[in-house]
Every structure is written in C-alpha cells, then in structure tokens.
Amino acid sequence: MNLTFYPGPSQLYPQVEGYLQDAYSSGILSMNHRSTAFMDMMAQTIAGLHEKLNIPLDYEVYFTSSATECWEIISQSLVEKSSLHAFNGAFGAKWFEYAQRLHPAFGHEFEFNTLLDVEASEHFAKSELLCLTHNETSNGTALSYQSLKHTRKNFAGLIAVDATSSMAGVVLPWEMGDVWFASVQKCFGLPPGLGVLIVSPRAIEKAKAIGERNHYNSLLFVRDNFQKNQTPYTPNTLAIYLLGRVMQQVPPIELVDDEIVKRAEDLYAFFHDEGFEVLVDKPSVRSHTVMALRGAEGWINALREKALENGVLLGKGYGTWKNTSLRIANFPALTDSDLSRLKKIMESQNPA
Ligand SMILES: *Cc1c(COP(=O)(O)O)cnc(C)c1O
Image (cartoon, rainbow, N blue to C red; front, side, top):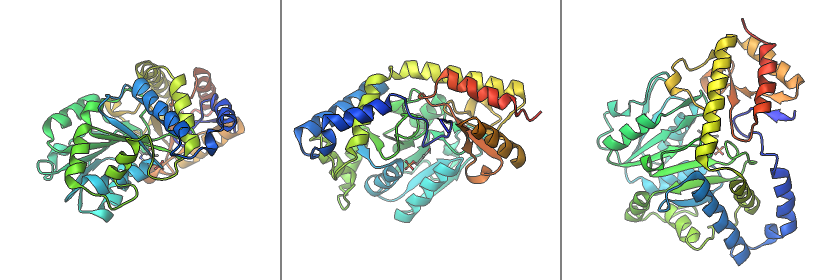
C-alpha cells in the first residue's frame, strides 16, 4: 500500500519524511519542554497556525493529545450545568455520549440530508454550550457557512465545533464558533498523536467564570502553561515540530480551500457520471474533504480489494453504514495525480 484515501490516519505530506530526519538531527527531540529551544519551537508552530489558517489573533491555540481529549476538556471546563449537541452521524453522537458521562447533556439528532435545524430543540434557547460537528467524517456531510452564521446569530451561549476532518483543508469561519478543535492525522497530512484546540476570548471568559482547575488538562491550567509557551505535561514534541514545518510549507488556507473545493466538485461529478451513488443526496450538505459512497456490500468489498491490488487503500464505512458505504478523503496532502489514479481504479469497478 503506498497511497491511502482513508479519512484518518491519512496520507502524509511527502515532505514529512525529510522533516522527521531534520527533527532528529536538530536535537529538539531531547529538549526539556521548559527549555527555550522547545518554547521557541512551539511558539513558531502556533504562529504558523495563526498565519496560514487565518485564525483571529485573539483566539488562542493550545495542543492536546487528540480531538477526543478536546471533547473532555470542553465538558470539564466550559459547562456549568448542561450542553446541547446537534449531530447527524457517529462522531457527533460519540461526543454527545462522552459528554453525558460528565454532566447532563441534550442531544438533537438531525437527518443527514437536511440542514442544521438545532433551533427546533426545546433546549436551544436556554443552553449555555452548543456542540456542533463541522465535518461529520462518518457520513461525508459538512455544515454550511450559512448554517453556522444563522446559528451564531440566534444562539446566546458558547459554540464548540469539532472540525477534526476539515481544519487545514477548508476555510473555517472562526468567528462563528468559540471553541474549534481537530487532530492532525486528517487534513494536516501528519501522523496521529496531536490535537489542536482553539479558543475565543469569550470561551476564556466563561472558563474563568467557572474556574474549574481540578484536572491536569483543565482549560485554565492548559492556558496558564501555553501563555508561557509551555505545556501542562511533557508533550509530543515531534508532532509539534512536524506541524510547525507543515505550516511553513502549506499555502494560505484560502488557496488550499480553492483547490480542495475544485477537486471535490470534480470528484462528485465523476461519481455522478460513472453511476456511483453518493451517500448524501443533497449537494449543499456534502463535505468537500470526506466523501462517502453507498453501495451493496459485495461491490464495496470488490472495489476496496481491487484498489488494494493497486496499492491504494480506501476508507471503510463507519457507524450505521459500516458495511454499505466506503469513504474517500480529499485531503490537501493528496495530489491531482493521486486522484487520477483513484478514478482509473474506480472506472474499472463501475457498479452500472
Ligand atoms: C477522527 C475524528 C475524531 C477523533 O479524533 P481522535 O484523534 O481519534 O481523537 C473526532 N471527531 C471527528 C469529526 C473525527 O473525524
């Protein structure tokens, strides 16, 4: 296997091989995480994220071990009474489930072929925290800019957005959320083992008002450390270094977004022309970074098998559609020629 379309862990940027070597020879991997060398390196990585992803300067960036840890940090440090979760797939559902273990939480499940309609929830008006999944990796849907904007306008509390499979792939409307987070093994084209947590001034105010400091990863304690360019625990120095290098390498997110959207449109047109069935019928809710196709189990297995024979890994289905769908990542580390290779394989296994 030398090419993967799995939506995480995903295809790495080919430059990562050299960065790994550089990390080793630079000596940074043996540096104490309170040393100047480490603190400077981490500050550069964070500056690179602000610059390339166009994150507002007053939104603070922290590192965690994963997106899953971010779910927990949000529950611990930003919820006084309860949270409200709107979701249409397995990742949003899992977040809701984890939150319920820590405090009361309300779920608003919506059909994945419809737009976000969380105002319909009886809890909408009085909720302190709304949890959204920007890109539902399990079924290939994404929340539109209009949906986020509309929700922001009408919701009084904080909004937390899981953007694990879209951050660094498409432009995110940062002001429409107070907490955004992702893991680097999706659109960042990096190996797994690091989460990125981004918080607005409003989220920090709320964390201060709650004052929760009971955990090693309490938001305020994480913040105290990051304000000194340090981390609460010995961090994944290699991953932070690699992320910094990738941020130097990538173009500004507007340009990445143009490319990803263009490629997604091309792929969806290809699926349509060739008779492949996209899991999501409604074009306006389809993701640009993760695509899901629906089909009979036999055909899906045959296509995955055929791809493997050609050194290409396709993503399995997830959750409800585990056996009757397959998923294809359209992440920035993949190239046009990778996509041509995918199309050739798919053409030979046309379901029609
Ligand atoms: C992959 C993914 C996660 C989990 O990421 P981890 O790195 O395993 O914590 C959470 N949410 C979404 C939307 C994802 O795609």
